[in-house]
Image (cartoon, rainbow, N blue to C red; front, side, top):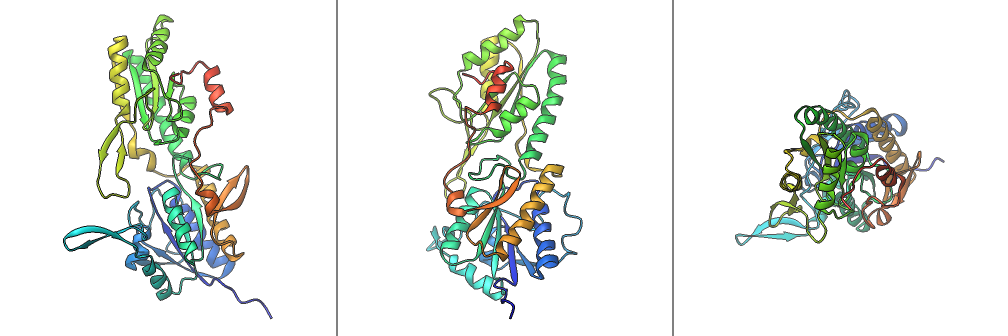
Length: 366
């Protein structure tokens, strides 16, 4: 007698910041679940908020038709609504309570046997807590910063990198025309993968990373050295989390009682102003911001997202609950959510990408 399927209906949600490729994962999960395993699929809207508030959308193959090249997520997303730390008003004051039981109630209402949680370190940490409480689920790694531990690459990174590189190509032409120093500020709170990779791909002269505290005098020397070689412009790429030696990150805004209370931004302006003061060279700043999160995913991200989505369903059917799908070399595998949550994947300073940058004469601010 064939073994009874443990999972017949799965739920899917997208949490945290958006990233190109989210829709490709959703599409792959739905098509693989229906075609390969004869499952039904429901989507929970706006991250964990949909699980808490019972906001759902039935997902058929027709529902995911045509979404492969689309940016964003058809399910919506948010970096709020942590079910273990959920804000409510009590006696006129905001307090935070554990409402995770609602998730089990709502998945039961919709007869969902297991979840696919697509997200970064915050969303996957919540997923681990739900798994520890008894929820069958699997995680899919998502972040444009490429800083998730235990996977070689996250989807969304390649598209963000392409956007940053294209911006540098455009900045080169105006920098050369006006003999300016152009500073491009990119995302990267704690890890400088976008800044480093785009800086190399886009021919930057200076790259400032969160992993290496910079000396502004060292940066200025690089600009002056180029000028002495009759090179009348310079390109600087700076990650939003870069900071000077002995200094701190530049905070754009602080929001009390927020899941993401500290928002970075403004380091590009600081660097440009200091460079102009020291060298006397006109300096201008471009902040890419959320442009890096938007737009159609690259072919690489579409393929990686599709592989992740299809594999997530297969691994669920194998009973690999409490795991995260990951890329190891060229192979798709899983690691436990506990292993995935051990830390962030920062740029190691001994990798060949860093040494190649130095060999090319790119200043890393040190």
